[in-house]
Length: 188
Image (cartoon, rainbow, N blue to C red; front, side, top):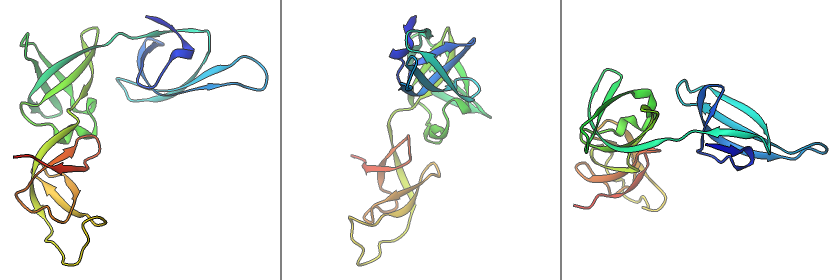
């Protein structure tokens, strides 16, 4: 779908120079003289290469149409991850790099959002949070105030998370998948 460059926003996916680009940042620049331009910082969805482009505000660009499907994670084999559509039972295999850092929170049976362009997967989004059990935590030090101090703990998948002092080994906690931060104690 063709759109004016001035309408480009962060998160949009563009087709430019026969590649798919995700917009990281978009700024309208008005120089002292001359026409305004749109400065766009974007990253190639397949290779991860970043670039900056300038478009005239009235210039049209091709915005890619993406499809999103909720798919269940089945298994990992080396760097390949296999997901299944729960309605059609169609399976899709993607590279681990497509998810990035949050891949360490991927669990068997987890339902993720797989984004595809013309049938080819271009991104995988995990749920915003996951409940994990603390397997290793430092003991509580008397005199520490709960509001200002956090202690390191290791959860069942081996990720280190900073938790409040009252969290002990065996406690289930909710962790943010985007930045591996403690959110709250998991409900039983």
